[in-house]
Amino acid sequence: MKISPKLLSALLMAQCAVTFAKGNADTIFFGGPIVTVNAKNEEVQALAVQNGKIVAVGTKDAVIKEWQADSTKVVDLKGQTLMPGFVEPHVHIMVTSVFEGLGLNLSNFTLPYDTKETLAQKMKAALKDVPAGGWLFGFGVDPSRTTPFMAELTADDLDKVSKEVPIFIVNQSGHIGYVNHKAIELAGVTDQTPNPAGGGVFVKDAKGKLTGKLVEPPSYLPFMAKMPAPTEAQLMGAIQGTMKKMSSTGVTTASEMSVGGNFGVDKEVAIYRSIFAKNASPIRVRGYLFSESMPTGKTTIKPNEGDDQLRFIGIKYISDGSTQGLTAALNAPYTYPKNSTWSGALNFKDVEIYASMKSFFDQGWQLSTHANGDKAIDQTLASYTKLLAGNAKPQDRRLRMEHFTVNNESQVKQAVKLGVVPSFTIGHVDYWGAAFNNHIIGPDRAKRIDPAGDFKRAGGKFTLHSDSPVSNVGPLNYISEEVTRQWQLPPQKVLGPDQAVSVDDAIRAITIDAAYQLFADNIVGSLEVGKQADLVILEKNPRQTPPADIRNIKVKSTWVDGKQVNAN
Image (spheres, rainbow, N blue to C red):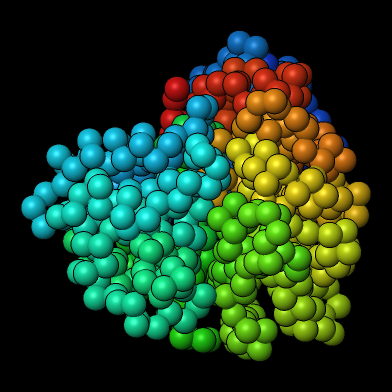
């Protein structure tokens, strides 16, 4: 083969560059276990970084000899552990920022549970911060974690907090809201107002009167339309605060599962682009556009648009509601209250959701569908089966299923066959496991929630997430929750021990498998030559720590592209 002079020159220059680079790493890490999460699950002694990428992993002597220069920064781990930066595959960054950064945070993941009285006290205390003409807006009320069980707020309850200030409180699940009569008046919702499309419900009592309870986000819209909108500066500041908080837990890549769900797709895309244009995010973000914020098949964003820092990759559907909120769509009734005949409801008819999915699937978008109940899982799997018909490699589309909470073994097998990758809100086991088991769905169904063990045995992948703001971001906590499957409420019990997996499996679920789910496994998720140097330094090695204690390991620092973005 004849090589042109120009090509020969280019090859020689490239070879010189590689030779020069080998003695000039920007940073070398050594002095503690380095958990690679590569195919062999190796631990190595040293890792070198150059220009934001990993250029060497191996023994300390070899890496230092080949890559250290006078200008190389040397990081002695001093016995601490280096791992791939964590990948959080399912969060709502914008929603978390609005709820926790701009609203009253009523979430309580500790014991004892709140009561209506303690919640009212917190809301009354916050009234002093509500400006004239403003609303008291809060998040985090959870009847399934309230004493007494399922003590749900009503408009009358909120009127006791204030009859003058409109109040809008969102349930911890995000699928239910509560408003007082002043808010109902301002929103213009009456006993005769029809329920909105997309599964929204203005709940009424037996006499047809509004109770103040709202079901599913479409029912929130009349109230949100009357609330003072945050300024762009307030919103961007809250988003950056949320990103920094995620980074402090070791997260280096996160999803945004509902782009457009609050302020419209174009506005929210513009906000994220502005943040990244200013290099103001400490994490990478993969975005999913919220299906209900767009006409079917219509979007100004193209599939996979963006770069390795910010990329829009999918369309997100919400097919049912919250299991702990009794709105997830089940095939058999809830076991609460006793003798209940209620089994929840789907948000879409089969033909409607399939038609919408196909319009985006054919454009090349990844699809992600929230499906908590087994009826919703059935609907989603049926749609995915039709979409993938004739596809020789269905796994290439990496279709997602969010939560996969109430399920059966045949659904797991079908999902694996289709290459579907579920992501589990593993806090369902920890924070809500006792409620599911003892009240909501009964022991037989509760022991199968978040069936990581079944997916592992069937040869499928799965990931773990917080669904923030539904639960707090904390990948190390997810490992403890998945491996022990122990619920929080005394007397503590193990929920479905056969669905537990090993520590190594759980680590993969928050690193390389989560990166795979986000189409980012080519650049992050493991410590291998050629990948971006997204790293986390931990106080201890989770592989050598009792599973229940992994959640208590301290994150010492977080690095993205070889640069430290957080130190604790």
